[in-house]
Length: 181
Image (cartoon, rainbow, N blue to C red; front, side, top):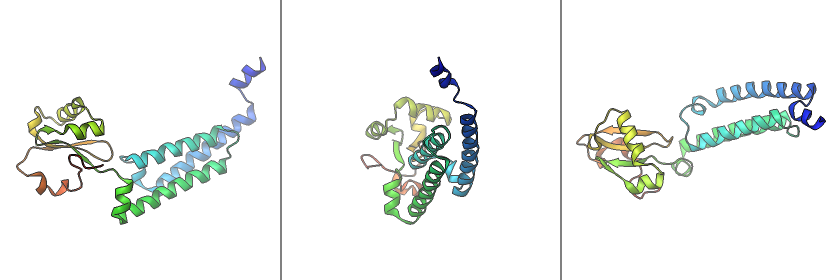
């Protein structure tokens, strides 16, 4: 019977430890997020998402696991934020690092025609393309010039125009056809 009580209640000292740890990590994450800047909580790309999940896991470990000290988890969180800041710094200054870290936007619809291979590789269905077009107020595929899967996972719809893809300045970084993302 004592074992089942331990499942529900480990004692006041353990509750006190969890409460203190939760408060410490709450404020640590607020401070680190403020230091890291708006990018940390904005539209996340894969890299940002991975760091966010890791920080949450480390905070939970530091709060709930008896064998992980507050200092261990806090240091790990600070290091992850520092690494994220450092990698972002390099991404902004090096095209090579940028290509290694960030996925390129991908063209999914070109002049009203779905790019089936790109959609397959990105695991985007025809229904998802239809949904994003309807959301933007389009009634036909041909009303859209391009649909782009951005590197944060959102889809951007560019209305139909006479501008060819090659002349669209803002489309220069978008992967086309079989180009790797």
